[in-house]
Amino acid sequence: MSARYIDTQVALDAGERLFHLSFRLGNDSSQAWLREDGLAIGWQIYDPASGLFLSEGEWIPLDADVAPGQSVPVQVRVELPRERGPYRVYVSPIDRRTGWHYERGGPFIVIDAEVEDGRARLVRQRLTTLRRLRWENPHRTLAHLFQLPLLTLWRNRDLVRSMARRDVLGRYRGSLGGALWTLLNPLLLMLTYFFVFGVVLGARFGGDPSRSGFVLYFLAGMLPWLAVSEAAGRAPSVILEHRNFVKKLVFPVEILPVTQTLAALVTEMFALAVFVVMLVAARGGVPATALWLPALIVPQVLLTLGLGWLLAATGAFVRDLGQVIGFLLTLWFFLTPICYPEASLPAWALPILGKNPMFALVRGYRAIFLEARAPEMAALWKLWVLGAAVFLAGHAWFHKLRRGFADIV
Image 1 (cartoon, rainbow, N blue to C red):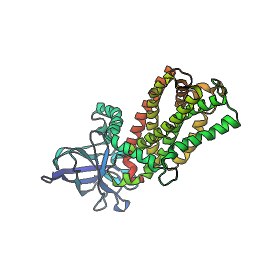
Image 2: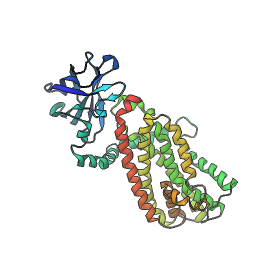
Image 3: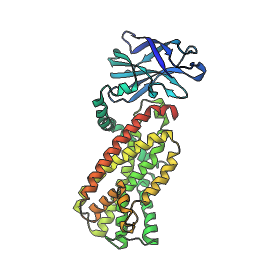
Image 4: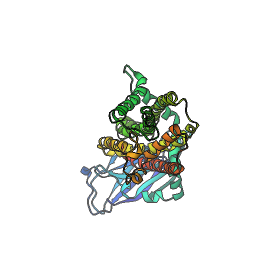
């Protein structure tokens, strides 16, 4: 579709937040635009500072079919939010079959405005493309890549905390065990794996070949896995589960994977408490090197958040991802030496599997809790770099796809 905008005019109701936009939309393509195909004009409001989608207006069908070379008059009425601040309005044709014209590289109208004391002020109106808009200030685009995820977490910290608490408590509401299942679930899972690998198969770790040594090494490896796998396993369905937030409310949907990550971290903390009790009982105390734990937790959380955003955004469009991720998590678990020693892996596989971030986390947890030494620095800095990269890439992917959530959930 190739469109042309003719005689564009913007008028603002005095003392209001209401814009009236009028123009003629010309058909520069070789095919006629037919009303029956669902072609319409729509508008969306964004936060110009962060690029976050805020709301969308009702689609306006064209008054008539438009032959090649002809044009049709369009009247658009845009009401800005009441909240004070800058806003950016996109006005573009939209096709029910192929989506927004501007997302496919076509030109569209951009209106920049500000709201203060309940009144709007027009700042700028222009015709542009999405590519041009993104590169008007390339340094700002780069800054947003790094700043926006952190701003999202900071601005919504109270909401994240509240929703994570509700997630943890509400998951087992109505059951006899209640919130106790937050402790029982990881405990029962770990007991199951211990019975299979420690008792039935008789697996042992070289650092401590006793059965109690196997329990400690196994539990130390399970600690990071519990948090990462729980959040990653739930992420593909989070947008569909909260479709009301996506469709009906101006809600920061990017915090949904964050609440899952925080809830999974709570599960890990319960498991860590059990592990520390067993460590004290078996060895008489916790080594001072356990103070290295934050150096492992931070990249672990960054990695989990990035995966959560990536899987949540993709899962909204690919409904089968929830089934696939269950298999991939099982494969990931058994490719990580959690319930068996590294020595049992073939020598040729170690250089490959050693690039697994869970491999580095498991090694790090065992080093600080069971071997009284700091994590390997070479593996630790790589883990930090990977965690930060996945964190930024996951948020950028989520931010890119979130515009289409309301259309498909």
